Image (cartoon, rainbow, N blue to C red):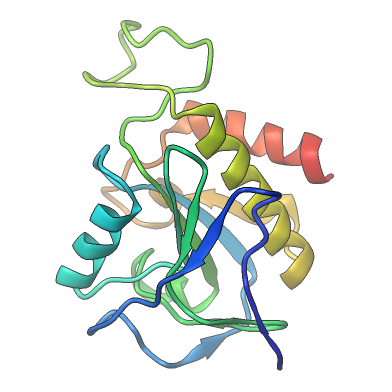
Amino acid sequence: GKEITIDAGGFPVSKILLTGAGRTGECITPSKIVIHWSAGWSNNEGTRRALESQGLSCQHGTDQDGSIEQWVQLWEKKSELTWCVGGNENNYAVNNEIVGAWFIPPGSDPRVSENPSGARVPSESSIQSSVNSTCFYMKQYKIPSSQIFGHYELQPGKSDPGKAFLQYFIGRVKKTCG
């Protein structure tokens, strides 16, 4: 099929393909969307370099200014397989690495006891851009909102992007793209 680029609803998208062991060259038909945090507050370049150095990959990263880097090939009905979720889940998932860590929803108090030390609200630009790219994946690959997951739901030992943040994020996605 025809090659495509992510639509982030007006936020800039750059196609910077990953190099190294994380690129499989294999294709999948996506049926779920997985939301991650990058575990650092640097930028997309830092996230990309960390993935490459670990032999990992994701479809794209979202920076705090809302800009997106698309890291693998996408086609009308398929995506390049990435090593982002863990195990067999990689065979079904498109993944978004949002720059940051320990996400909490807007309006949350980071001092509340269930929030880990260093909990922060991602920027509105990164949230909206991520919502827009999620809507793009849902439409492009016919993925229902019931198939949006946090990394923690699919890989034991992971906590990203945070339960409360994921609930908030899915609510935003439903309001934005149905």
